[in-house]
Length: 411
Image 1 (cartoon, one colour):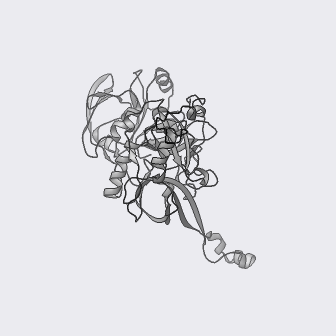
Image 2: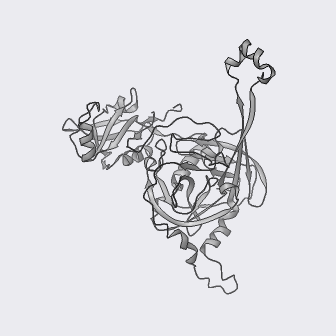
Image 3: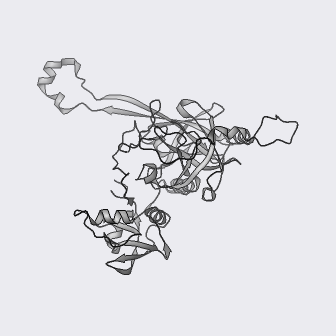
């Protein structure tokens, strides 16, 4: 495990993926859900405590009065947002040719003699296809979508709401945050307006537009159910995102589409749902999307600061469990703080002097309360810049300086 992770009882290990399922988290995530190969995350696990499902069913009953007698009196804030943003929401189709290698055993003369022409001489090829959503961020044709929508694609096509189709080029893709940028050759295109996801509050209106299950330009509404959901809580522990939770319906094919405020600004990128749950959708905050997209456009890749530790937020119960486990490898004397459970050899953390068993109290003079705070602090830092850690070690307070490295490109 090369990135900084948060240990918890609900977190399970991950494994590499094929193009067909985009990115699969063991027993947690299945992309596409049948009709699409890269439509959205489908998280298979016990559902999180969710906001009341009653709210999502009454959204359209809250009609904003229209004081202009010359316009349709049925118009409301949702229809105005859809009219404003809808033309800038696109459908993204991707495809990849996959060769199936013939097992070496079938080259044995015995098998050849027995099966004859039934064994192919050349690798078999098939084309795998996926679909998702995206939104145009400037008039020159730059489009934001999820990395898993275009992952490994040989061909990407973009279909606008007016029916025009363009060949897309992937400028960059970041699997750590699941953000990608696609470019099409066009001008004078409709574009969205980006908002500020840091100012969001639970209870605000949320509008999703996308292409779920191949049904283009589908609109759903709801509220912001919560903000700051950690990747561990959502079930994708190797991502570095503090997700927005919404009860606006999100389905396979919505991936990469915009989550909008009541004023029509993009506040998030829809990316994940939890299987078997209702009203539990997740979006990447637009501030995170924009920060990563700027790096992808300028450099073709995104850099993520990396320490190389596994950590967990301490509780009295966890302390007791660790101390009663003879195989734990550490003894915990604190009831709170962030316990470093493991330090990777030769990592920036190891080089800076962090040790398994250390309790993190502060970073750069700011108190951190849980593992999510530490991960967010590191992610928002710069590669090579110093981070001052205040630690509790062997009943003593100490200071350690660590310079984060770049997140390894190979897992």
